[in-house]
Image (tube, rainbow, N blue to C red; front, side, top):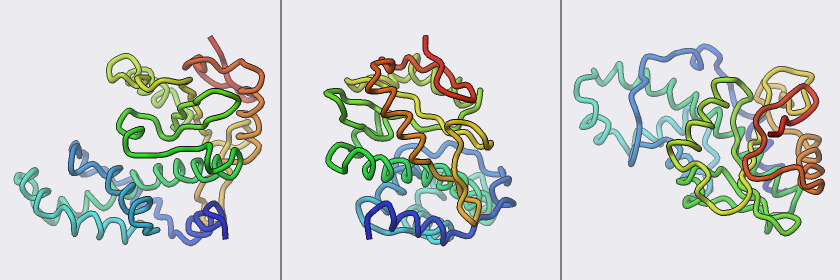
Length: 225
């Protein structure tokens, strides 16, 4: 079984929880050693553990309970845990969509041509596609005004485009009927489509994609500067 098929089957097995997704009682900044993205990468890519939402929460808590108590002594432990579970659920939900885009890109462009590592992640690049003589640094996010605004903020204030190569915004639409709409699995988990990557490939080949020149989307495609 390919990595893509294995990961897709894992996503199909997940039990989603819309109620947990809406809980936002713990919104403290989890940075440094407490960064959930770092622990997700460690579990999924370094240790090869495909953890469901509950298992990742327990994995994270086991490794970080002491530091959490030390960092947030003003929050009752029970309240922290309840809010943290919902916070990690929301974080993991989005990251798993990103991971699927990575595996799908490997399947589409060839595994040797799609790179993901901690060094890239720390610069804000989700993964890199090497194609047609260029290095394309891919940025995954939901296609909303708020997400686009945050992407621009990272470019302007956090060196979001520091890595050499062409930086590509590859947002996904939650609504149906758009060229970048997610495909929904039976459990309502959204994944990237091959048709979206085919569109991306054609835009790469056309030379229309330059460094970070995708400034938005329409129902039918990217908007360029």
